[in-house]
Length: 241
Image 1 (cartoon, rainbow, N blue to C red):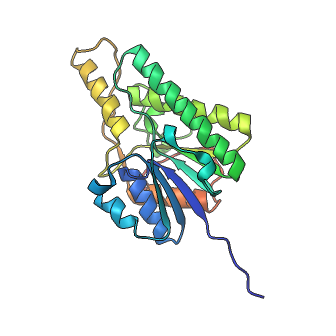
Image 2 (image 1 turned 90 degrees about the vertical axis):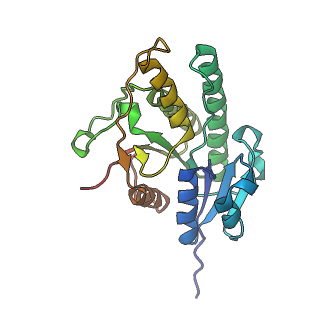
């Protein structure tokens, strides 16, 4: 008797960003259905337009706040890469941004609970102060020293709280910046930190020294999560020696 294996599927928020496109292409190459969400000018994103010709790629050009999650079929794993970017370092602006991200996370977790999916938050090593070596990975106590670290620690907390309330599975990937790529939230947060180092602002935080992670290592771990071979809730990433 012929046995049909259900094709795996993933949903990627922030699918049009550099990391989102990397994951999208990697999953499609493995024959995995990819549902991507992002709010972009598709005509000015040639790579996204090219991927749109592939039957395995389904793109929703909306911000997370505009998404109707009832329109989506169940998926196996949700990779969460999209976050509201802070527009300033003022307390009111930061609170507004964090509240939007908290609501987006709740919506994602609610969808995950209904579809039986696990959620993967791509976070940063800056949550633990940044720049960890392999022999330091046993201590994952949060100790952020940059705005980006504080920002992503809040996102981790949102996921952990919502996941506990909804009883879903999740993973948090604490990763350095991927080699050869940039992240708009990281860039914005570091720009604020840079202004503070220059004496323009009043807070005092440390900057990351530029440690990066190989893209191949990042994709490999994401594939392991999709295939169910990683069980840790918090996964620190580093380049293998």
